[in-house]
Length: 431
Image (cartoon, rainbow, N blue to C red; front, side):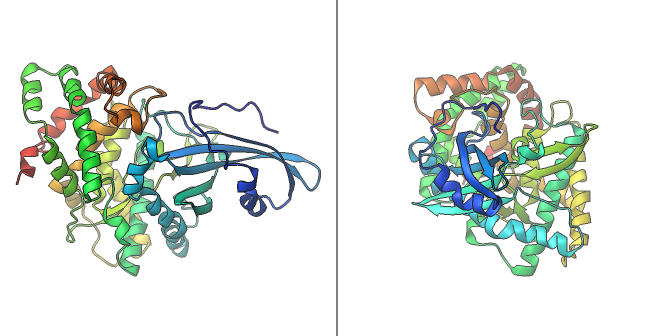
């Protein structure tokens, strides 16, 4: 039976319609030998600061079985944010509609490609037990990977070399299947033309407003990270305005048909992968989660985002080019196994793509939007609404995030690295 249940986010409001009756259909499919629900306990699945675009619950259900024994089943329930807590903005970006397509159609198809090629042990994502559209909201019920001892790596510490290599291999498996699927079946639906950025006035207003609200805190972070004053003055002077930022964002939607392109994950960082381990501590399996922000484009966009946000401090820049090679070697291996008909991507082209103008948004966005949150300890106010609000409390939170010494340490290394490579030449985006 259920042991002591810990709720990692006591402030999360759980709708009362998430109840025993709602889970009846899933239980009948997943546990056909149950006769009675003895206890139903929904709690938050993750602490604040681990997910900003959805509500995640872990559902504990104590069951009585036909043979008289009892057991506890747990499931992960995912749904949209309340409209007044960021859900309206997320709905405008179509994130849940996209994830619905991924779990209903594309992820099963990608895994089938590997099975057809004889690689039967490739699992890309958790098993999805239910997808549903209810009163305009989209819901998912997933297997609980924690039952199989899957867990996230500490986002603040980042991934060591072993975890980075396995994660890059898994990303390559996902990308390779997506490229082969497109080659066989034609382009993906229009939903996958955009990711974090959607070319609409409402999304432009949302992203521009969010950028303007955080601009002072961003610049404060640059000033307080310990760089020489001459560099700080240069970085502040060249910091983008809202128009340049939107132009940078829009450029991420440009796709060069001459490049090697894939369906990128779009939000690939340490909290969107889970690992379980052998008894000796080595990694057994690694699985990707959260497929809301994928789009068709260069794999360099996922690579930039992932390396910046997930690699441990001591290897992020030291192994930067090596990470690209590790990914590329697995990518080519998978494309060959899946019988990709087009020319295989060359390493020199992938390395060059890391610095192309239309991919640089993912570096700046990761550096200034995600990294301050990822390196900040769990806080009840770490949510989309609080971070974007135009209130004194929200501004204080943003200042705390950007003045965090852990963030300053990374910024001190990364900002010059990208500045010197032209990523932060925002004048390139002036008309």
